[in-house]
Image 1: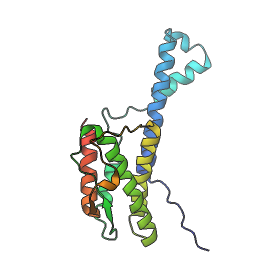
Image 2 (image 1 turned 45 degrees about the vertical axis):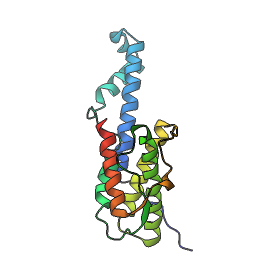
Image 3 (image 1 turned 90 degrees about the vertical axis):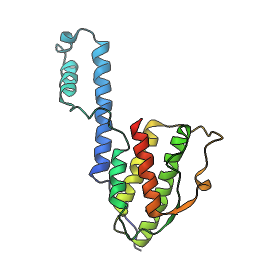
Length: 181
């Protein structure tokens, strides 16, 4: 019996995870240094030396970098695909600000539909679609975002179904809008 192997994450997905680990490490470094106000005393014990070197080693990340930039890059990769032919519930790029999280969730839910379709049809961009879905899920899991449904906000299924090209264009606009804040 033949089975489908799950795609591995590309360098874009690994980069996203590495950047979050660096941010977490920087946070730990800062907390340790703040809790121990005698910086020179840190160098007297082994743990202090380790933390000092880790803090000094962690490279600086670009200030103001949006967490969705990796997804945006993968979207630009798949948008020219000719072998993805699906209709998807497509949120409007100009939805109300308080609906932003629900809109993003909707796009990632529909990305899972694209992924399943790609697996069935063995399309050339399956890995890129998987990366988009995985990075989106990781971001929502990591931040434990809690949606509060407003009367203004729609459910995914309430949006109009659009073709793949229009879906990707709206998804890109939503991410670009989100990253401007």
